[in-house]
Image (cartoon, rainbow, N blue to C red; front, side, top):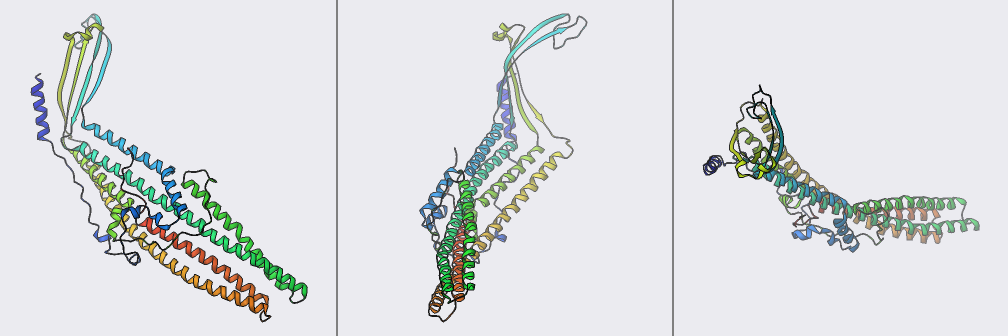
Length: 475
């Protein structure tokens, strides 16, 4: 066979085909799910921060310990190591699909003992009545021509799968930074509550001593002693629970950092700043900022490409295959040029009847594409809802903390007046006890409100997609 003529014929097949079937990806119109502005998030900061500011939002809280813990989590977290391995897997799968573009070449060798009886007919074996050995060594080549872009679409889908894994890694970063900040803020908030209780306990012990002394002197009865002791015991009872919650939060924090529980200890230094409001931008910004939305779009790109890959199954498949081998009755003949032979030629596979399998595969792929469109739309709606919810909750918690601050000032004055009036003999000890109990309750409520304000602020940064940068990931 003339190899030059064969090469020209194969090239002609490529030129005749050479088209990619299936839809090309176009970003769907998300206008119907995107409002022009946020509602509750609208009053946030007006200065649009840089991408780097959003990526490292925790630095704006002005707490070095928080910053250090988040940085450590982003470098040592087992969650992130898992996400990186998913990128490695996706890139390897892409290599599998891309290899389909190229010819294959495999070495082959074999030995066969052939025998045909004297009355037998051996068209491809030994002559009648003879036995012989057959040795072969050579190569087998094959190449499926991607005339309709089936492999190209599969590679396109694999590329999108890689980007999906990258965005999944970034989404883990966002969630991880938020989780670390939440546990840290919870611990610091609990420290404020513990501090308020411990301060109140000092006063409670003084109250018990004063009530006991007054009872011994005949200025009061045992009722005041019982009341003051009751308040002391109640406040003492709150400490184990608060300290237990703090310990649990430190254990969860250690897990987030990939450390053994007990290795992480947060210093009781008060809450970070809570006046660092981000800019919400416009809802369309979420397409850029939130990795989960970017991930949903990559899933749609992959689903779109697989529609084309399945549609290509309708068309003929053209392959070129060949065998080049030395063949002889002894091992020495494997290096004899006269024992060389080859077979080379194209083959075509045309689908005629397959019971509707290809149609069903295309229907499945198209349904998955439509599902991916809906998933992207839902991701946008959920993202907007998260921003709105976090902004509204932060605003309400901030207002509550402000009002509780005013209430604490009033309660402090009330406690001072009650103590002074008690010492002057104008009121009994019950008024003092109630005033001090109310003051402690308000202080604890204020600590909780300030903690909630910060937690909702973290939620807002996470909802806006903060916590990652456009960097190269992996190898």
